[in-house]
Length: 122
View 1 (tube, helix red, strand yellow):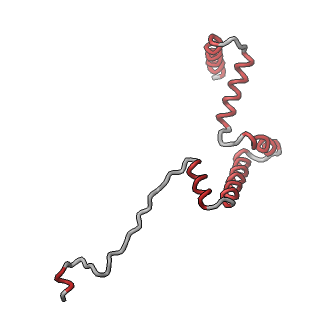
View 2 (cartoon, helix red, strand yellow):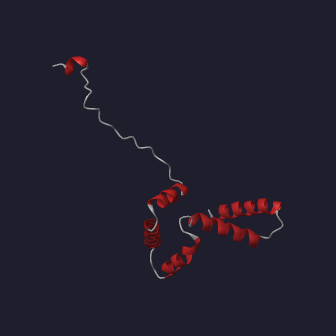
């Protein structure tokens, strides 16, 4: 399996190297950065050091992720709480939320009946 991985990596590098004049270490660094970006897409760049400190401190990965996600959600709630209702709606629209039309059911006027004219004369 490792041999197949090495062959695949060598082929990817040779394909990449044909289009650029960079060396193996540049390619390897680029590949590592892409893997990290994909793996930590849920984690903002400014919170990565905090995550690394938690992991080095012995906190399991899923627990550290949960802590950071809860903290980010709490920060977002605090930020939204400080906004006026209009600003909150605009922030939600800017973040990709959609407008939804709400239909209010209205009651029929008391002068009207479903039975027609004859019912009113009884």
